[in-house]
Amino acid sequence: MARAKIALIGGGQIGGVLAQLCALRELGDVVLFDIVEGLPQGKCLDIAEASPVDGFDVCLKGTNDYKDIEGANVVIVTAGLPRKPGMSRDDLIEVNSKIMTSVAEGIKKYAPQSFVIIISNPLDAMVTLCQKVTGFPYERVIGQAGVLDSARFKAFIAWELGVSVKDVVAMTLGGHGDDMVPLVRYASVQGIPVMELLEQKYGSAAKAAEVMEAMVKRTRGAGGEVVALLKTGSAFYSPASSAIAMAESILKDQKRVLPSCVYLNGEFGVKGYFVGVPTVLGEKGVERILQFKLDATEQAMMDKSVNAVKELVSSMK
Ligand code: A3D
Image (cartoon, rainbow, N blue to C red; front, top):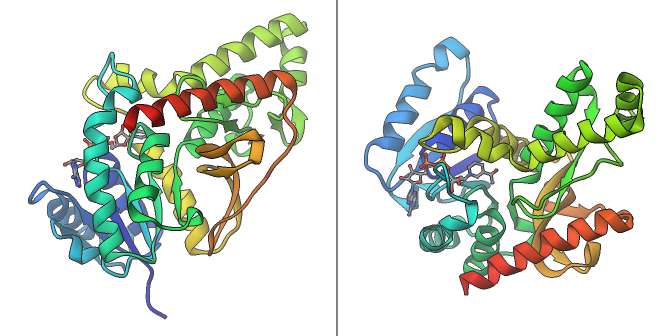
């Protein structure tokens, strides 16, 4: 059976880690595209020369020609500028919209059957734009944000409670901005509510709420925390890992439940916008959106986050 083909558009910080993860996990052959000559070729050669050490059998090709992505099963897009300290994701909209338009045209022409996972910011707007330009069915154009935002939330909970990250279940909904919605009520350690464990640790509900509030705040600002430390760009290891989990679920038909930025047609009270919600990702792309009831506070936070997405999208027009 032929190996899957994964096209990575953007060979910068995230693109390079994506290529390496695809190779290490033998997810498929990799084509890394960038407009900068030599950059994708150099990164692919570098990763390929580690193959005898790491023991992976996949082909890696760096390119500046869209033709090379022909026949890709999955395309992951990171083309675009990242944030620098003091910038919001939304500040990137003008320049990254132009880049995304050209990228989407390339994907439409050379990989018309592919599943597309967007990482470029501002995420919710870039997914919207990519779907519009490609005209691909909604189940084939999705954005990575929720897997990472949820991973950050899970990591903070695990560190706070001194338990393995593997045993924490937690999720964020909404847009990939400061108004994202970390779901406290459903956060658990193997089903045991996190709030109950925090209350045991600190001896009062008030202190538990305070500690959780700090974790929610840190989750919302986690991207900015990394930007402030790096100074020259934004997070790249964790966004790459997150998109790989989505690609793997599609390529291997795992049907994992992963929060993804997808087109909503009435789900969670949202119609006509791409917003982060729990989805089942499998061989057909977005196979299902898992709906559940939000309480009044959660719904209010979701509405606020969705309004921010609407404003962002309308600023693109
Ligand atoms: P960076 O290292 O600058 O890589 C971007 C690459 O895009 C560069 O190599 C550019 O040469 C390339 N590029 C520019 N224009 C084009 C074009 N027209 N066609 C193809 N390639 C082009 O950035 P990065 O990898 O750190 O980040 C990439 C994007 O991901 C940025 O927009 C970030 O803001 C975004 N990002 C998203 C998340 C999410 O969780 C959603 C997290 C972190 C970063």
